[in-house]
Structure formats: C-alpha cells, structure tokens
Amino acid sequence: MSAITSKSLMNVLNIHVKELVNNQIIQSMTVIDWGKAMARANEYIQKNLLVHCGIDAYDPGVDENCPKINVDNNSPGFDLVIKNNKGKLKRVQSKLRQVAGNTDFSRQTHFETTRRNSKKNKDTEASETGHVAYSIDEFDYVMVTLVNVNNGLERRNDVNLWSFSIIPIKELVNGDKSCCMTKIPSKILKKYEYKIDPLNPPNFD
Image (cartoon, rainbow, N blue to C red):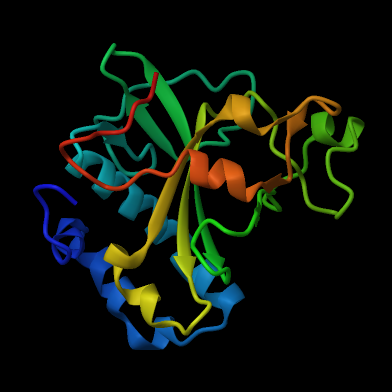
C-alpha cells in the first residue's frame, strides 16, 4: 500500500466509526443484522478513506460545507458528494456487501433498494424480486465495500482486510429496462477495484 502501513487505515477512521468496527457484539451478528448495523457507518468509512486519498468527499447529511447539488429530478439516491480534480461534483452511492467467495471479487453482489418505491421503476418492471432497481439518474458512481466472511467473521473488524470497487454508472445500466441492473457482476467489481492509496487517488471523471 505504498506509503501507508497495513494498520494505518483503522487510524484514518472517525473515532466513533472505529468503535463500531471493533465492537465484538456487532462483529458476531448475523450477515443481515451486521449489514444493517454497519450500513451508515460504511458511508463514514468510505468518506474517511477517500479524504485520506486526497479526494474532496462530503457527506450531505452531516457536512455543513458540502456543496449544494441539484436533486430536483429524483429523490437523492446518493450518499456522498465528490468534487473531482476538475471541480465538477459527482454523486456516489455507498454500498456494503459481505461476500463468501474464494476471493473478495469472485461472486456477484445484489444491487437493489427497498427504501422507497419508484413509479419510474414500477412502470419498467425494474425488479422481479419485489425489490426496487435504482434509476440511472440517481448517482454517478457506486462505491462498494466488500467484506469476505467465507472463512469466519474476523475480517469484519479490520478495514485493512476489506476491498473496494468504485464503479461508474455507465457500467450498471440495464438497457432493456432503462434502469440499473439489480446485480453487479463479479467481473465488474474486479475491473473497478480500488486499493486505498494516497499516492494513487481514484479518478472521478
């Protein structure tokens, strides 16, 4: 990891988030319960790591200095706001997924929301599972945190052992239904893998 040591990523985290990551009660939860308990914390973690890499990243829910972004055309389906090196604002959907493959990237992950219904998605029959697919105008990138629990739950409490993908929306479009795919293929997760490194910041063009 270039100039950073393997343990230093934990030191990058907000102190309250670090407490959640290290909490043994949370660590022992079921896959579903842990995912729910850590979903909001994951947004903080991703922001902390992006800022660590020199990215101007903001959480609209807590950062008073977050740039204003137009959400008139859709309910905000993003969690973070990024200002790229050209000064343009990009919307990032934040996801946390526990995986049980041989590697962090060897299995697809689901990519749906149950938080709200969308007439746009219903009209296009965006999801056959009862979940709702994201619209293609809700965000510009999705940042996926991958935590491998194939050989136990120990990786849950060490961010250094997590993997990340930063995927542009163009890779997730379901052209047949004019919405996002409801699963992210493993090859796309791997293609857009990002290893946290301040000397090699991610590109949000």
